Amino acid sequence: MLFGSQRDFNLITGINRELLSNVVEQEILYYKLSLEQTSANIYGESTQKVFWEPVKLNCLIDRGDQQTISDDFGPDSIRDTKFRFLKQDLFDTQTFPQVGDIIVWDEDYYEVDNTTENQLFLGKDPDYTLTSYGPNYGGSLSIICICHLTRAEKVGVIKQRI
Image (cartoon, rainbow, N blue to C red; front, top):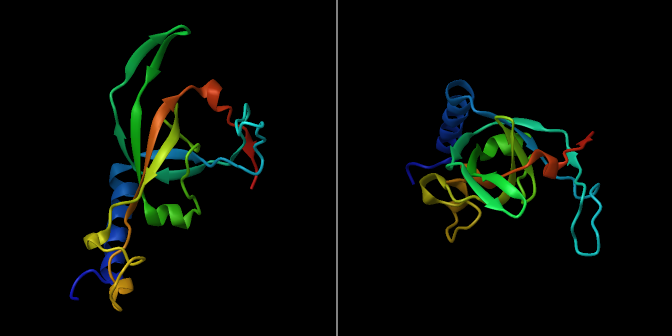
């Protein structure tokens, strides 16, 4: 294979990192849910969640349109948003996104509903290959967190020291 080696992958990762941090400059705070410190009831639910100290990360943000819905409790704003992270940045900060984590951006709180990791360099996944040279080519570039807007009171972010 001529293209797609680890060296090429590192070049693309470096360019993307520079673009995110020096050109795009969209920063968020990522609160990782501490499952060990959060107590749950018999149904697996918790009224008060505990989060680790936030990590500041650069990302691309794809905001959906804000909508207002009304129910028995009054009007409420909703917005679906996707936060696109460079996988290497998450790996370097040891931040591994999971459902229930909180992202703070523009003084709004977003709860992670799902994560997607399907942007592969040259379409090759070095973890799944049927050739002997496959692990040396390709790689996963990004992780996308699909989130919804949530109320600050509902989040109940309690700072936890690492």
